[in-house]
Image 1 (cartoon, rainbow, N blue to C red):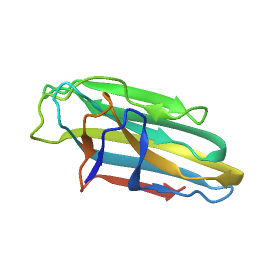
Image 2 (cartoon, rainbow, N blue to C red):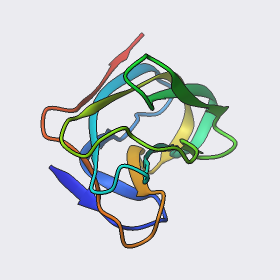
Image 3 (cartoon, rainbow, N blue to C red):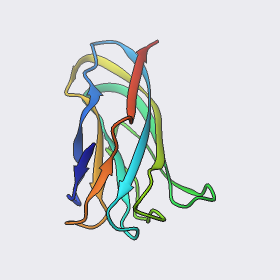
Length: 138
């Protein structure tokens, strides 16, 4: 499990990749999220490497059992981070998903990195073991 109480997005250990020059990637992730306080949202995010020529991504995160979710969408111009919200309970995991594309230029630098933040500093949120992030070249 990856746990943070930071209100600033932090890198989730093991959920990243380093792109190669002049390569196109498709990526996706599925995440099991929990919160220590039902009124505090775990905010899933994505940080882009530099040196990309194009890229887009979308994150969707559940907020209630009825299937409603919140979304963050964007491109390589800025990191993505789900907005504030609240999970309905503290005893079960709730889903989030991410999908996108990244086209690396001649000199990419850094990683394409999954991130996590707590809506409220000092309150633990977690991305559970079993969450995954995968990518492929196309």
